[in-house]
Image (cartoon, rainbow over all chains, first blue to last red):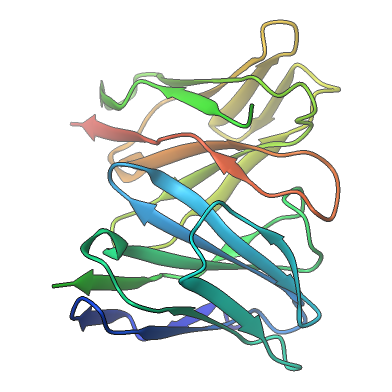
Length: 114
Length: 113
């Protein structure tokens, strides 16, 4: 069974640009969550999608958005990039929504904003 | 409060020793406490999880101890091996489709020969 696939693995963007990250969940999983991981803040929840609907949202500015497609694949978008957005962005998939079902993480997308 | 406090930040243990990582939480609504293991360049992977109806759960060399009254839980790695060297995150959440994992800040474990 294939795991969670995140693309691209690495990205370098300039301040002010926008970026789109992609996540393909494990087959059969309909819930996708996104997390930002930084050395200073650790793992912080961005949002969760289930059946193409955003079910939960973390405390991030509106520049961070996401969506989920009918095949459960998800994308997250960050507009007007800031230096502080440099981080590892992790996607996790699970069968059902909510934090208390086992979440399987992808390897992440390392975003560097210069 | 959604915070989960984790300590220590880093830990060095000799091979064969016991590694102990502690976490404390504030939200009494939390009822699911997983531990994740992350190797460099990889995403976190679920290691073991516990619910507050038990005080201890053991899977192989990994044990979670849970103290509901103190709102604390800990991970014990027995007979630590160099292959256990990784960053460990505790997390907490509550039952419900709108819940999310709240992570501790992580502990970098190094097991030396």
